[in-house]
Length: 228
Length: 255
Figure (spheres, rainbow over the protein chains, first blue to last red):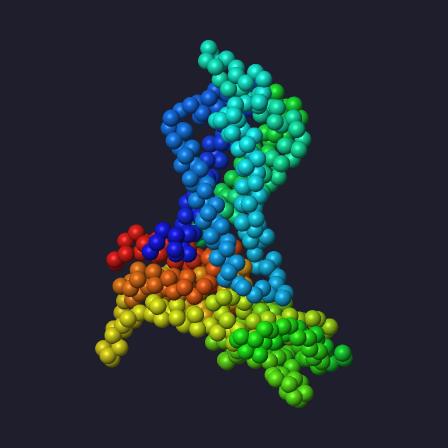
């Protein structure tokens, strides 16, 4: 039984990496929410400094990229296999009678999120890790230690309304992807029982709403000058 | 019409054999009684076609009382038509109205090749059953009475619900991925829930999933369309159970 050959093992990988990426979203949203202290980004920059310099965090970042790549590759394999499983389409099909559009559109939503991620990584990850920030001055002194002024970089990026719209579209895709993906992961891992299925469903819905709105509120708050 | 009979436009998939290219053909049919079953309406259409000296529409059917799993039509974009919990033979023309256009197509899946017109070859399901969907018991005449083994009521009910699967293939037909997991999971579940099925449970799920994959069915993405259109209302809780069974077999193959 190979690691990827069986349909069910591919599902397990999809679910496991999906839940792992969900755990990352919690950390990411939690730290970014520090901007709402509205303290000129001091708390946020301190956390950003910690995340960028801590050896354990940096090692976990490699795991994060591997998890993301696995999720994408596995998802694409599933998508193409599923396409192949129906070589001739129905002349008249009414899928809306029995399922939701977003559950059928996970590959499309995932692709939109991937496009967003490329833009997002170019905006922030690439600058902090490799090319350096574009904002001037790029560093700020907090408690006598020089910190990269990621907060100022965020302010700069989100002055552009096009960037704000792209980030909102990213959050929109993420919402629907999570709305199906969260509960779907538990089903794939065999965790579906009438005792707790409704709790998982509720938790998934609440999580998708909260995380998407929290992320979406950041570019909006900065663009509108609520956070500065 | 005054007698309540209907005139219908029927668009039916016609394909002369498994290798020929098929296409949708349009037929007009009048005088259809709302009391007819869907298959009786097709019988009526076939009589009209035969009278014209043309080749009748081939379609699968047997018991016509909703239990054999032979009838298999994709009607107006849905497996077994617009009603829930019924097979095509139990669908009645009162579910349609005068002047309706009805699309009738065969199940579409790599694992279900079209034999002719609306008939598909569902031998893939037989091969999946042969790979593990059974219990090896002694049939020498000295078999133990099934009721002698205590089984929790809840397990017995769930096993029975899973066993009501008639193997019609509507789950595959309606699944956007042409996945057969509802069928396979029902067959895995009905044995996994009962003590008689326990000795072979791990090799059963492993072999049945392997055969399912080899037949070219797609992967489940938990869309849930299958349980909505299943004529026997089989729940996707069974798919979760199969996922557990398979996981347990993968990490510890022996019983």
